[in-house]
Amino acid sequence: WNLKKDIRAPIKGLAVNPNNPDHVAFIVGQGWGEKASVYLSVDRGSTWNNVTPQDVSSFNTIAFSKTNPVTLYAAAIVEENRVPNFYLYTTENFGNSWSKSPALPRFEMKSTPLGGRERDIKIEFIEPSKTNNKILFLGVSYGLLYTEDGGYSWDLLDNGFNQQDITSIAISESNPNLIYLRAGNQTTEECEYVDELREEEWEDYEAQDKLIRDTILSE
Image (cartoon, rainbow, N blue to C red; front, side, top):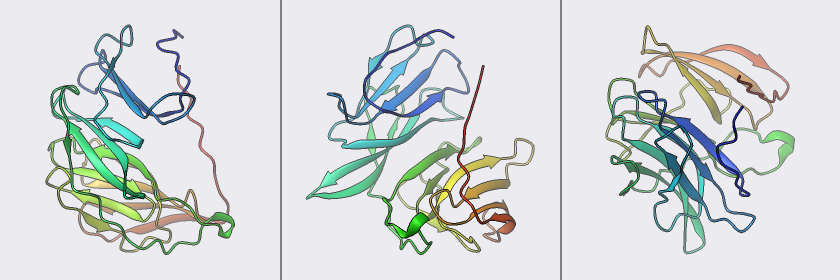
């Protein structure tokens, strides 16, 4: 292993360009004297550029486009009149400029929180389409958001979910219409669902009455 950057603030997300392994980006949250920031490298982490959009309070996750090698997406929180709103930021020129979507829609969280305590709304992931730069999935605390216009309008795909919070997604490489989801990381049950894209008929593959923590290792 090689150390690529040492930073005090909490790292919120890491992404590598699927079209170019030299391109890598990560986001950090506020803390330890650091502001919420986006860092981008085009030389495998040897050097880093701060390409943070303006007026962002915090970040949740980041992703590279799968069809356009210079496009990135970042899910951010912007505090407006003391109210946190979520936005999707998009850059099509490696962070030289960013476009900001309208505020993401909010839906009621009906699932029972783990331990009965309230939980914050959070964006768990951004999953870009493999074939269309404008099609994105967002896993959020109240379901799965879907857009076909780059984030200017959203559909909530939640028909049949046992729990609302969607924490991870896997899309079949050979059949992009086949999607697997994980739901329930912050609620009292965890389920796995499968869907044929846009049919909104989700099948509950397995429900477990316990919380499972994830660990990801790589070498």
